[in-house]
Length: 617
Picture 1 (cartoon, helix red, strand yellow):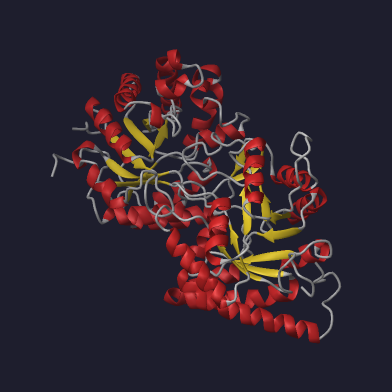
Picture 2 (cartoon, rainbow, N blue to C red; picture 1 turned 90 degrees about the vertical axis):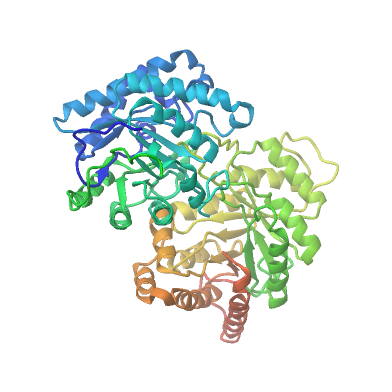
């Protein structure tokens, strides 16, 4: 049974935010062993603790995420396991004592192995590594243990069983994907049932999901457990801003709005994970301050167990496409049926985009080949460069050429968030421009090393462009660089207003066709999430307000807005791609096809488009 925690503040407790993000901002790459900074640069670790403590948090976590012997061994630091963990606890304790108020020091315990180590390390070795780390942290006098970012339920149960044997309260945090399941495929209810209430002081979610997703998990957890709840969301999704560098763009107002709802949903502990900052956590402290004294003392034991020209060669004057992503195993047949229905409805092609799901998905090229065989359609295939070497990309592309895949959209891409440090497993040997140059070389009959091919390929090369970036000049400049490298058409990220598209078409539309992606919104929650948690989404405030007023009619209002946007897209761009398409959307997509054809027909009879809005491809 966990020991009680004398002196713990009453009411909802506020935990600190991201450690890795702050150390990353201080110049340390995320693929190095950040816990080793407890020894090599303790001042920067102390500075991060101080910044969160100055914001008023009740719990500060040690810089020991990833500090098991097994994970440290990958950096050659296994022999320093005890020193790293003990130093991490001491630095946090010194910072807490310096505040002159009651602050709890939480020993941060991650899964004992990385995702890549998991398949080769026996469960007994994992348990031994966890026990070693926990023993050091407890002996260094932490007040509570937080076992966090566990994507595999088996490992979470192991960690809880180990940590609960030392007389210190335990907070258990699983990480869930957008589909509400852990990486191991377990539901929220299954996680709740697997964790014995008498072993933990609080149970909840951290990492991977942003505030909105964490709220959904907490609400579902409350239906299946009486254990006090905890939530430490990410600051939305990361934006890659350079080699091994990431940043988050979520704002404090959005985070606080969801913290209010998390409190209403019954959380006992709230904090932040990747991307959250002291300023944001400070805003959380202010909101939680309003709720002090409204709950019983926390972290006590829970008790005993109970276009006029084709936009892309071979396409009609204004093609309307639908976007699909590789499905989960066992769902391919349903996706192929949806593709057939879309083709019958008048969709000219399918754009196959990479999935950001955190579990297994097939490749975009494989799905494109399958759709070509089964549906008789010539897809446009998105190929991201993350986690692929240039030679692996070249091999895949040469194979795709042999199998008849010819239209490629090049994108740098980002890996799905798998843990506390989302960049650790990325490769990025080339970015989108590098992939364009590779494809251009293959079309000219030479491989990456300049060696001649038996026959040149005939790829049609496209590139993604994000018009939601804060720096629209940079986005347009990127498009120009991609065109100069050899891109023959551009595919936008989903747009929710026309200003950026208008400018893009005016500046580059005379050189290459621009295909605009449209994502029909279905609810206020969806719009709110996209605007605040997903990087580089430009969504008018009026759109969000209208969906909020719509309430249960959000889908209908979202479709009306999409229709208005589609009209503008047909007036500005050279083609439309409807994304987020499901079987239930086929009739709506058919309506958009008819609308676009009418707009384009009217545009032709009324004369050429305004200067800079050429439909010439």
